[in-house]
Length: 101
Image (cartoon, rainbow, N blue to C red):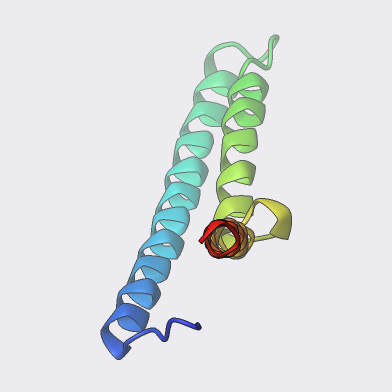
């Protein structure tokens, strides 16, 4: 038995997706602004040691993971995969219950 989504549920999913994308772009904007400030401070006051690179890399990795999750770059860890697995486990449970009835 296939469960149909209502218009409201589809709207809620779309709204949540838009919020996730908006959150990513906010994260990206803050990353860029903070990195500009840190690079300026580093080059102005201690150009002999480029310490901003560590922040750039560390936060950059976090930003990359955020992008992967929001834009489903690797589908095996995305929401579609998760929903398919949930449905698979539910169907498996349902078929097991029918077997024991």
